[in-house]
Every structure is written in structure tokens, then in C-alpha cells.
Amino acid sequence: MTEDMYSVEQVADRLNLHVRTVRGYIRSGRLRAVRIGKQYRIAASDLDALTGQTPVATRVGGQVEVSSIVQIDGVDRAAAERLGTLVLTSANTAHDQAHPLRVQTVHDEDRHRMKIIILGDPAATAELLHLLDAVLNADNGLLNQEVRDA
Image 1 (tube, rainbow, N blue to C red):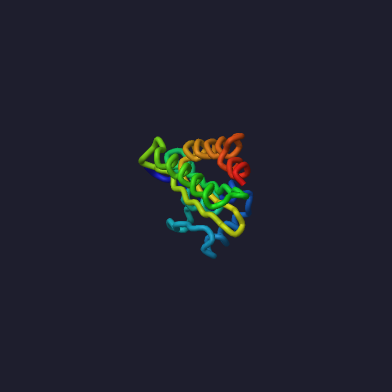
Image 2: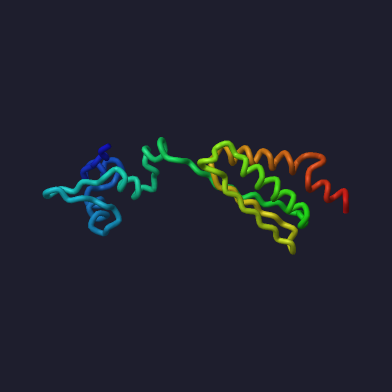
């Protein structure tokens, strides 16, 4: 697979910049380029790096990963342990074992706050977040049980 190469003029047109500005980026090292004869050539991936865009090939063929942080207030240690066990068990039984969800739970006992950090596939993460939403918002959910017991 060959990568697209652009001239300085093509890059200037794509970015709505002056040709001198693009050459200045190359000289300063802000934009990587290869000199072929008397002309510079810029790889598509280097142009994407300059503009902060993800290359199309990576988006189409690469793995997509999301991260989520869920903060839950009003959680004592017992509820945090139950909720942590539920989340970790659900994450470990995910469908795609080649790309498992990575989950970490943290409980701040002084603030009665729990954070759940989830990294992984968008669909599996969404499924886990739906489970959390159902458990936390149910009338007989983990947190409501603690309020009734108190």
C-alpha cells in the first residue's frame, strides 16, 4: 500500500495557507517532509499529524476504543464493593475476548464517592453503561437499598 504524497503547493491549497507558510513549517520541523530533488513532498500521514486528524486508514481498519469515567456519589463501602463486583463480572464476560474491557473502580470512603473507569470497545462500553444505569436507577437498586437500610 502506497501513501499519498503532496507537494508544498497542494498542502497550501488544502490548508488555505500561503506556500511560504508551509515551507516555514517544514524548515522549523513542524511539518515533516521529504526532499526529492529541489522539491518537498509531504506524506498524507504527516499532513494529518499537523492538522490533528486521524488518518482515514486507521479509522476504517483500526480498532476504536472509548474511555468513560462514571462518578457515583452517596456510596458506602459495602455498596461500592457490590457495584464493583457487578461491573467487573460483567466486563469479564464481554463478548469479544480478543479486546476485553478494562475496568478500574475507586472508592473514596471519606467523600462516599465511587468512580468507575472503563476502557474498551464502544459497543461493550455502552452495554456496561446501560447495565450501570439500570442498576443505579432501579427502585430497588444498590444505592436505594442502602438508604432504606439506614
